[in-house]
Length: 423
Ligand SMILES: [Mn+2]
Image (cartoon, rainbow, N blue to C red; front, side, top):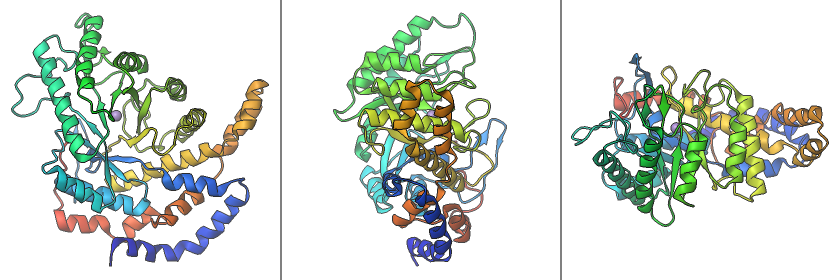
């Protein structure tokens, strides 16, 4: 029996209870069908590097059945997408993933209903056979020949991405310094800009470059693209095909990320998102596991800002997960992350914008909070489930993954001691 048929069989058992919950929630909403139809279209890209059990710098404990190559990573995303119908694309990291025959890889992905999202370059570690080292950075390096090597790598990633049907290059640099005085900040920035300009010049007409920022780690004194201001400065100097990528974990504690999002949208410079959650730093925890209210507030700004600019929620911005952890089954973790994103999105769609605007005009802070929290405290899970059911996904994706014994099957096929590449 095919996976989709097995999923439908499982759904039958819970369908009447689901209908009762849905009817109850829908009765209190003005346009439940409008929300369901938006949820059906909303897709989140799955990173190839999150399909194996993650590690820490202290160790790594494999759960077994991990993908051994790109084809198996694609198959894992395919299973996830069959279950939740919301993970319809995959984001590759090069050279962790080297697409051999691009035509075959593309066809393989298409057979699972998947396409390729942004491709990610990697100049934060040295690769075997590489002529020059990135020990002291890449695009910002004091030595022009190191910068040139890093530029060439990024251009090669664009070429690989073109063959796969991607439309964006995502650049995250670990470039920075560990000690005061180690680096001339201005030269580092200017070198980075010049390098990015060369990469920008190699972009195909319909491509974008997404510039990611991060305040610290692996460098602990300065990071050359350390915050959204530095990223936006670069994106503005580069031109219309460059924009800022926001990774939720790449902020100092308690940063008001929703405000950053609002202003980047205003400037037309929000490229997309790397979703995860964190308590202390770049923890890469499951989306929504620590601070779901913050996630809702971010989505509330996203929906408001995109609606003002008449942007299509599903396609105008790159939605991606960037998380990895060391104790959960990677597929279950990703299913939880996608679910958290869709819940926050649905809640944000419920915010009564007209009333909020009126309350803001009247400086009625109490009313503003009531309006936001009224949306946040609505149980939208039946709407998310209904959207998934109409796309022939599972009523409860994590339960279906377990009941169908998918991990056990993968361990049988791939072995219990496989280690996914790239982590
Ligand atoms: Mn990221």
